[in-house]
Image 1: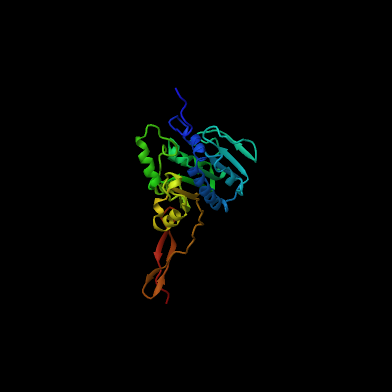
Image 2: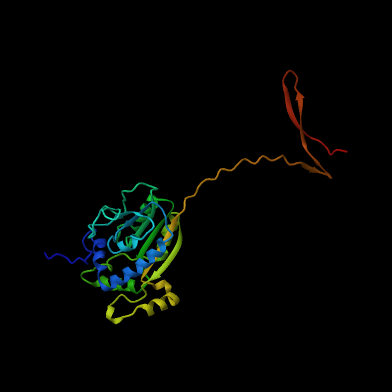
Length: 281
């Protein structure tokens, strides 16, 4: 049996590994440049001790090298071509839905096109929420299903061999934002990119016109979206008890205040009884 091409994602767990190969194509290199610039903008004001990236280790390695968070943990979903153990990196192969990371220990999580190729996208977001510290940030890159890229994916359904990235389950930014909201995240930044059709590069030598028109006329139909959200944690604020004087009973012109006097019972102790004192004359 012939070995399937590297861009074929029919094998279990091979999608993200094949996506690294697809980024070497002309269309992939153009997308990597735009996503790299987007990540630089989203990470420029992100600080902390640890940054976690799942998938796409090599395609975006140069961008994360300039991040202010120096301790980076790279978790590819399969063997990566990059060399581990250099540049302060720790590289482990894991399942994105079951991260071997302690809870509340990561300052930023980067998920480049992980949700589209995960078995359970919501479980991946739940894991990201678990490992993030309060006020930690998650950055998501995804292919937009409401675009020409999503149409290209629908056309690929009838093909005998579906290859990356068209074999993924494309999402919409609105659905991802809803999932983040349910997990307690607040969306801070949203960006859209790649408005050009995802067909042959020779037909569209310059995508600047498509980007300029798309950002103004149809931003919803961008091929790729980026979302940065912050993890909010509700805390209980202790309130001091409010000691207020009992309100006076209003009767006539002057306030009437309740008084207490002792009534002695026959053969027993004195029992308090509340009476009303009239206004002073």
